[in-house]
Length: 399
DNA sequence: AAGCAACCCAACCGCCGTTTC
DNA sequence: TGAAACGGCGGTTGGGTTGCT
Image (tube, rainbow, N blue to C red):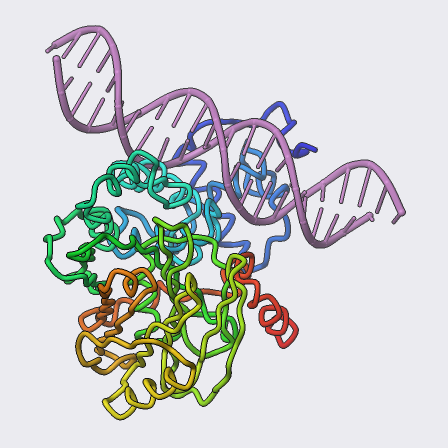
């Protein structure tokens, strides 16, 4: 069914003249005082030879006083990429996370700029996965760099910075625009995995947690995204690491809200694999989903004593090994640095260790505002967060 | 300076879901 | 209850601009 107004013969099309803009603005300003009820009546009331739909579009995309013009900032670009990874081409939803930007503007920016950057970096702009050619390139041969350039590019807001080859097995996620960088270096003995990271909004609160949870999300989201069926009823943010080589989840961790008092053993089904996570107050737990073995337990702000507790927990759970590459520093508070270490099943197999270092120290006050996720976004995540569905429904019910 | 191609982005088109009658 | 009207959205188009030869 078409629009009634669009079938009119005497409507003008094409670019708007300054006079038309003025008429529409004048009408909309007066209508905002008295209230305007339907767009189809706007052309007649405003004295325009346009269809109502065209007026609406012109107002929303251009004439609205709160429309933000000008080039997109790196922060905005990062947000677009992050949210697009989760939502896909839902431009209106993405635009809601960019105050003053319209869906049309975001869409155009994506098509004209971001898309090309991703393709240039060997990423499929639709899925954010590595393109086949890039996968071959990155994984071909034992000395593949595991996409470090690619990840650096992503986490650096599109400014590709060469990732320095390192002899260690650590990779770093930095959410600081100034410090942005992401390094992946293969283990010395054998290549293990290229990890994908997914940050899932808290299923209970419907948004990424304030402060460093958001920073963490912003920092880790550029690592890319896959539909991931895992969710925790906790106050934290779930970060999943996915082994791209094996095509399975390698490990997952949940950064807990430090003030949370919840403690539970949750069972999750992730991509057909059962994933048990111990979401205790004091520990964020890595779970090797390939071997269904505990890998390590790190917690925001965990001290030596807490680490010992975590180790005991692991022992209780019959786990094999816990490797701490360095003492974790404080986490989840403003200006904090998060450090976590994971020993994956693959790493265990070849006696190598992967270290995850999440830093948000220099993120600054500008970060959080754009990283808030609303219920609709959460709902979108719920499409692949099986466990989150009930929580979303409950939230809606509560609202 | 002219011609051409690539790019950008405002606007249009068509579809879908919701509301109204 | 069903059709019409409407708002909203994502995909696409085409005119203007810019850069290159």
